[in-house]
Length: 113
Image: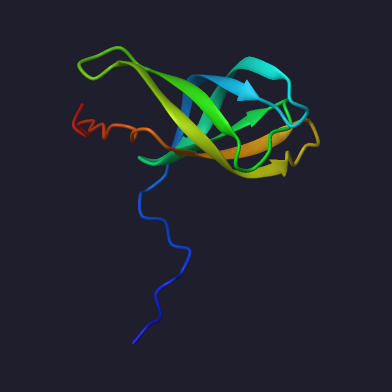
């Protein structure tokens, strides 16, 4: 019998290069709006890089731009910061967020295309 990992994710992450706009308040209490790119995403959260220092637990407004198509358009939601780490290159921060208001839609793409 094998022991199940306690930190195993419930939803598969997908590496993405989707444009996103993030609005909120940074670590210093300054309101901001920043355009960035999420580098991975799941149905319940995403990760992105930013120049802003954010705090775990902070609430953000997030708009992710999806490609045009039958399920394209903007996905907007509220999110909570769950992870903040200095970027490996020392230039900013890597942030993990959890969607609070709704989940990112499941998008199926035919592999035969």
